[in-house]
Image (tube, rainbow, N blue to C red; front, side, top):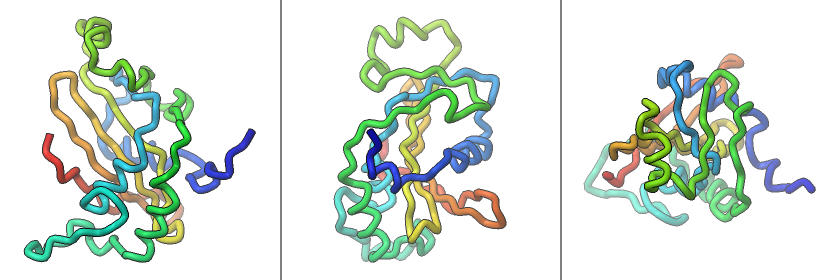
Length: 180
């Protein structure tokens, strides 16, 4: 059974793989990849600067940390398309052929059994990624990316990319406004 919801997502994970290269994710180092794709709402929240569809700007802060990428009509369209998609999606090893990710379910991450399993493995980080979403009439793709350390550091962000001269480039990386 095919869902028409899948047509709203990118056809390949090339943008994410290109982004991983820019982040110098060491290909022969083991990382844990959260097999359950992170919620679209994470990326939408960070990009918007708040929860929900309404954009709440900061009138006393003249800096646009989105470099003009936030356009109300495109934001509303993207939010409607992706915020209410509740279909569970999962990563597969073949989505990231150059990386040796260990797939682990979100349910057990960072629990005591998880720590016991990996404590002496030299694996220190869990990578979390959402399904890439189209933005601004498919001009851009946007996704949530986070590397969470076993030791508490967290780097949630939204990544915005576009295809230019047949190559994916990173346009903007926006860090989460909530400090962990």
